[in-house]
Length: 266
Ligand SMILES: NC(=O)c1ccc[n+]([C@@H]2O[C@H](COP(=O)([O-])OP(=O)(O)OC[C@H]3O[C@@H](n4cnc5c(N)ncnc54)[C@H](OP(=O)(O)O)[C@@H]3O)[C@@H](O)[C@H]2O)c1
Image (cartoon, rainbow, N blue to C red; front, side, top):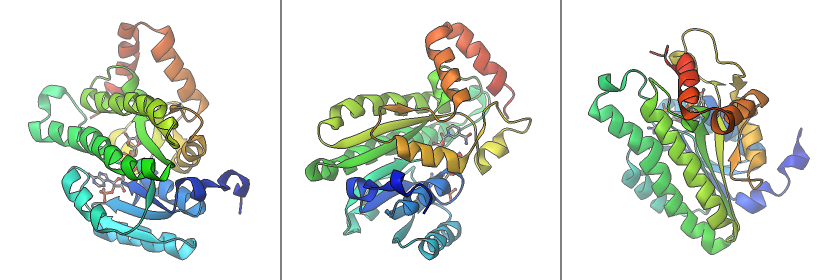
């Protein structure tokens, strides 16, 4: 198998099961496949049961792994936790991928949409991390990948709420990277730029942002980066963008540049 050397020891360190939160298509589907390539068994979460079951079946046909499909809404942490508590498996890796992006002017977003963004993008990854790190600490090993975004490195007009939640994930991962390192747990935030996924293609109706990447490349690179530092930025253009936004530009200039990218979203 291609990249076999890169995958050596992955399952021993992070297995036997990974929890793939939002993993039936798009970047999540690519993550699930990248995990299966590494021999990881997977608990696969998504809402659409038909797509989820098809993804689980496909993975089990292609790779010698067990995939447990769990149809659930990640907006409801308590329900997800109740499902997980019924499983008699050991989860050594959390990849939190799902997100909700209320796109458009803040004043036009409903309270329900804003609460859903907070639940899916902040509350559930936070509480799932807390829940799963307990057994990882007991086992003295594990891994956590939280999806963040270049949009979360500064205020992002028309994506203000989403960007703020992505900032939360990056900062959470950085703190936990240091705290949990000594307990054998690797934590990384994947701070991605544009990725060709159905969600992105639906939101970006003009031309893709510079440096837009294939989902498979982002997933592969992010898993390979686990254990190498608190933040991983896939792609040279995105690495430069993060440096520019966080180190070179004033906050005002960073927001104004971001506005040129996100201000046209609808
Ligand atoms: N796409 C980009 O350009 C881009 C750029 C930077 C960062 N990111 C980050 O990358 C991650 C993936 O983003 P994406 O929009 O491209 O998504 P995606 O990976 O294409 O798809 C989302 C997956 O999550 C599931 N999902 C979504 N909401 C869910 C919920 N409430 N409960 C359970 N499952 C849910 C979907 O299945 P169901 O719909 O069936 O639930 C699907 O399997 C996000 O964290 C995003 O912030 C994306």
